[in-house]
Length: 164
Image (tube, rainbow, N blue to C red; front, side, top):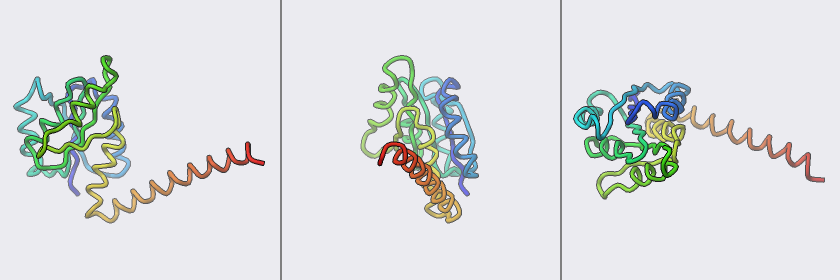
């Protein structure tokens, strides 16, 4: 199985990124975690992205706040799928990071999840790997089934309480 790169622009992003890490662990997907800044360590970030495919990665998750250029910098150096996590910061509630991550020029796609949407970033990468991995696809199907059962149980409880 290919591994997923989880890269954050600063270790202050770790509380958000840990949700992606935990999701990857839950599904048994191998990963590596790194801190590379598009602005403070541009050479290291570029080298990591450029060599990611040959180093066994299948996708890159890039989390950053504020200017949030990390996902775009990774996409510029790799043809692997890049999933950006815009991280909420004190200024502008993360909208700045969202716009920096999602507004990519043609030819440099970055799939972007919600502000602080680390779980969905991991799940999107897992879905990509599941295209060719039936066991992983089955785990995703089972998780969706459990999620539906939880909602239906809540529905039954609400109906019993309020419907005659």
